[in-house]
Length: 114
Image 1 (cartoon, rainbow, N blue to C red):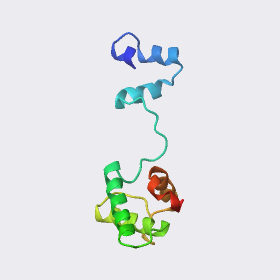
Image 2 (image 1 turned 135 degrees about the vertical axis):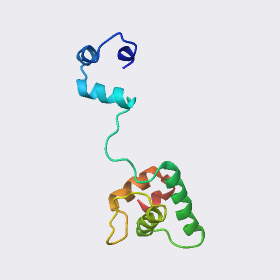
Image 3 (image 1 turned 30 degrees about the horizontal axis):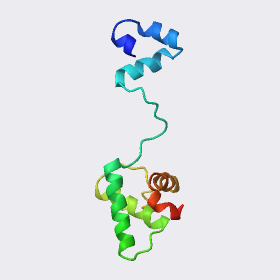
Image 4 (image 1 turned 45 degrees about the horizontal axis):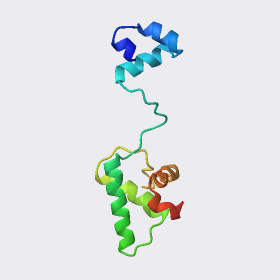
């Protein structure tokens, strides 16, 4: 990408030299990122998720047992309250099990639930 930006190589020549698909190289040049991102982005930003963690920990401090179902329900409520776009179950008003797994993997303070 650096060679292309400096004008030393064309995008076609760089794609051939480094064995990178031309379209992939073009996409990276357009968005300016070289990091590979797989899968869907998390529902909440880091700051939102940290705020959510504080909220869940406050339940624990008040004596309410923190269960996986409580976290999933509260995640749905939290996203609704802050108008965060989500893909949670609207009918049951609960976050999914896979979301919970990924959330727990990002927050070791809840490992006992895993």
